[in-house]
Image (tube, rainbow, N blue to C red; front, side, top):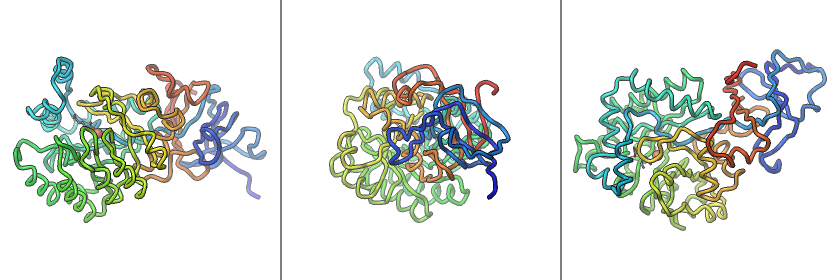
Length: 411
Ligand code: NIG
Ligand code: FE
């Protein structure tokens, strides 16, 4: 029998494997993880390591906890400018939807993003992606939607991919051209959707720059019929869909998303029982975005209890964007998901690991077991629930991304 060899061995840690059927968090105390190349080769108790194993490098985790690398499955982190002034206005009483109707909101970020060259856009967005990674994110989804013409939508997607390559983070890109009506099409939303379907979806697909297609189905976004047309265009190009659904009102968007076998329906504060049934039947993930709920001072929670009861998988993400969720802290979102939405800390961590991976159509990450991609995060905490319990501060010591160590201090 060949003796085992690991390129890297993680020791001096407890492991929250998040494996199904392995008890709370799939915990292995005094665990070890063996890595070969970019994949996990072995996970178990340190005392059960194969006797004759040889190891190129051993990495001690200071008695902390190892979790699957975090997956932030819903962000708009590539944008230019900021919206602090709009925040001040909202504090004085202006509504998010009113600001949008006056040509501020998303349109303001579109102006700034169009003006930025690719290098400038990357320079402004890089610290946001880096901040996510510093808290343990190893995979991040990034949407377009602030370009709103072919060249600028593709520019956003290219910058997202380039930042992922530069920082060593997996980036999944989502085309969100149906985010708002650009000024050139003011009052002609249907004509804009024609352009999205005829020009932008095909261009993104041909360029290989989109992994999925999303739309904003709401009173200040697009109607159900317009959303359906975008989904048909995505389907024609073989691209999976996602949807900003039921954020500010009930448009029955989640059921439409489910009809198209969507990977996820996101936000969902106004989700109806009908929408829940449709999501349960199609296996569509519910992506909960407590940062946007908090920042807009919403009072209507997504129907978490009903989603749980019906077995709809719940993911948690930052929704990092300048309008409704200007955060780069996935760990704060775990806390908010529990405190504001009443998830359990274990549900919240599942929601930012394997459930989030599922919302991106990725089956090779989000749980720690042999054969999975070697994406892990290491935290200086005493128990897994601590990740959701605290807010502020960052206990992440570092990550492995495809087996490559990125640690804050040398080890
Ligand atoms: O996820 N709802 C629409 N899109 C974003 C907000 C975008 C913005 O305000 O810039 C969201 O909340
Ligand atoms: Fe969003």
